[in-house]
Length: 158
Image (tube, rainbow, N blue to C red; front, side):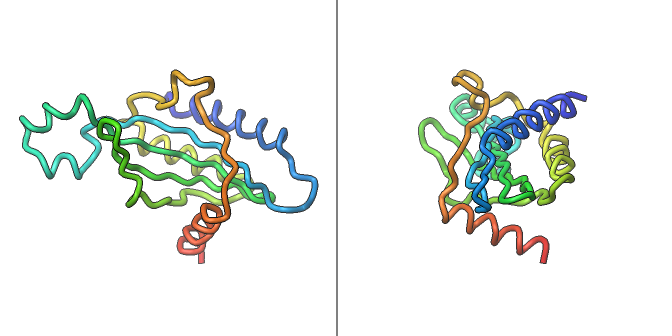
């Protein structure tokens, strides 16, 4: 039930940002919107397989997996991408976190966002950026990231 409400909020905010950052030059947009969620510690397969129950309980308070959702649209199409990685204390393990595309379409990207939220809903504990100025980040994507997103898209849709 809540996934629909969250999707509507994200969608409206992204639509507003896209309109504010409209690119008149005809070049693809580099703007991305990133929303980060903390996931339940029980979500991580790595954590559950490497530690027994006692060890798990001891480190769980200092550990959590993180889900990043990235909305990025070059020209008319919007892509919905996700990646998950582990946070343990102050160390971040993004090295093996690969972007996955859930949707790339001018209208149906909203369905992709809905699907992401439905799949992860049982594991989401809170917004990761809850105590920052905004609950999302606006990113200026670099060429390497844009190239990676294109490769991920082509692998799925070609």
